[in-house]
Image (cartoon, rainbow, N blue to C red; front, side, top):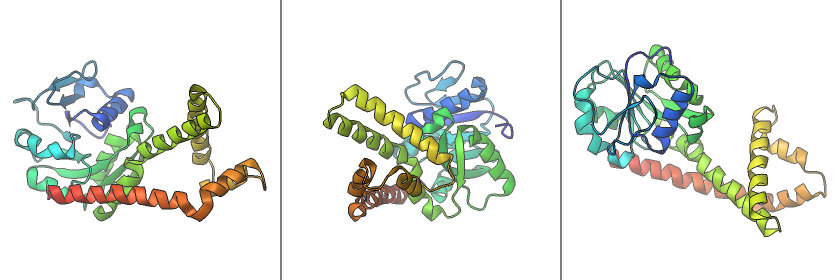
Length: 269
């Protein structure tokens, strides 16, 4: 975050905001640079100041991160907008809220960038989708410096595709967690203890993901490499592959998530 100087305000410290905060602190960002604004006023981490409302005086934030629930945005705007100026970079992690909608609510700003992280940012292994409209290279570099400690960065050029990309990587960890849970329950169904099945499912997914991430081959090819002809893996893959049922299910899942992003965008306009 060396390219960003000045105070950082984090408005909202729930699941996603909290994960980003943990990622920053874990990477050595000084706690006194970050101010958390949350209605509960509940503490978040040693050295991080927490306020129920924006501080009435002091230095204007260099960065304002909007991380409340999208439905709470309009409740927060009256207190936040007067404290934001032309030197403030607004970073929004609000699902479905477009840059134009934010610009109406925060007319004074340096720039607005949409960022959609996923929860592994808490351990520096997240995926962060970024969209900055027609922002220049310097602004993009500063934004990357802000979020680089949290994981891999992917720029989405067309904001119309941001909701679809968010459905894949932003929502994706939840879908994968469900898959791991289903593997564990299936292991229990074939006779393993619940505890052992859960351990095996999680360790298997972790190892397979690391292997796929480090391989030059596609996941589809890696799956075929595991499966010997007429073997037990092939028997299981035949069930998964029948009628492309898994692909159809995931397409239905992502379509539902992307559609909800569009609904939230329309509500915020």
